[in-house]
Image (cartoon, rainbow, N blue to C red; front, top):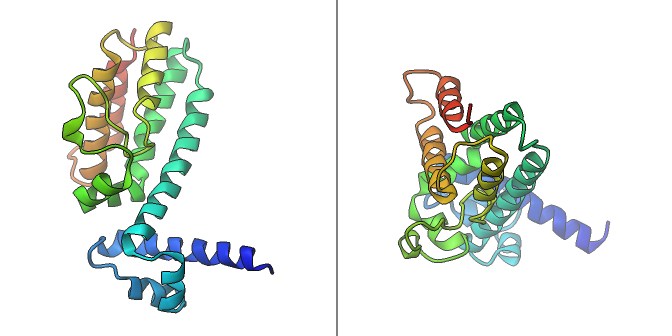
Length: 201
């Protein structure tokens, strides 16, 4: 096995263990030492790959973000914009994707740290009114917005400002994510109502 292959596997192991511990214990209570012990590696090996905990988390964030972006791009690409059922299915799948995402839940549990330090751009407050900031899911402000705009042109999503509709969708996805075990009605019913209201007749 080459040193490059061995190094890549080591980094993959570290990221996998870190993701599990961050999810279980939160960012502040997860230490580099705990990651090393759980991964069966020396502290020196962890530090050689990731000098700081923030560097490790940012690498993990970027890996997860790129994976999510590839998944969503494939989903949107395979959607027939002129077909209401296809658009509805895509939006429902997007909601379920967020609902089931342990990594996204972890980000929201951490509060400001990941959002402020691990995505492009500055703070949410610096974004001009009517503009979408970088999406925590993808790192791109236009992915969901472009999808909505394309569907509007095809007549399958109700008319309105695409940026505002995107902001509303993000708010709903956020609520579905952080309150997913608190709803008095099934999440599936909430998703159906939201999507039905967005897709035009």
